[in-house]
Image (cartoon, rainbow, N blue to C red; front, side, top):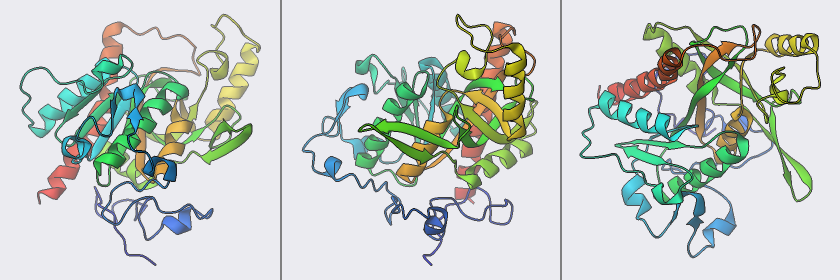
Length: 338
């Protein structure tokens, strides 16, 4: 068995999982389909797509640069933590928040590295990269895959990705935080199913178990004024019918059928519903990258469909996932300095 190469946030023994899912010592055990280890010995991303390796220049179209128009290794080679979410404003706020938490001085306005794209925004402060991905799986996977390629070219070592966002809760109160263990699709399978060449390419949608546990314990230690939960997340491909809502322009189900479905989700361990979980989890696994999803529910879907809280409450609650991820990152660097 290969030696452990985990860079633990919390010491072994403090969490149930002793290794990260991309640790060389457990990779083969956890991927029985013989998926090759994608992390190189120095911790850099080791994508195996030979088509990429044979390109003279790779155009990252939706980020509006190429792997040669910017010295990616010089600009992004030190990235350790990557955070993504729906809106540009939220991710810029996260970048500024982490600069303050880590004592990183910013001169002038924070640069948007993807400004020319007019689609996404991307900010960097020290070892933190923050970019938005829009709403839903198609938009999210475009941004995510191009950032993965960017960090591949940049030779970033052992990056950890976080998706922060909002969601609907299942049996959990508004303003709490849900840390995802896995994603469940609309057919109630823990997979991201993508049509490729007329066939279904199915990818398991499990997130790194140790990262999720560490996030949960760090959140508990921080004694926040909100509850934190570990659980499954349904990743829906539609906001209305796909999430069993009754308030969309179209509806094929009754209130009774809606409640039966939501209770079925809850009985399977689902704590929240959003629109990216399955694809995010699947692509993290396929890239051999540790990933986590940290979301705040704006309502308990067992009690209704519409968000009725004030704008002030929603703005305050949006900060809760940032606090959890921020505490985690600060904890990492505290350990590094000991």
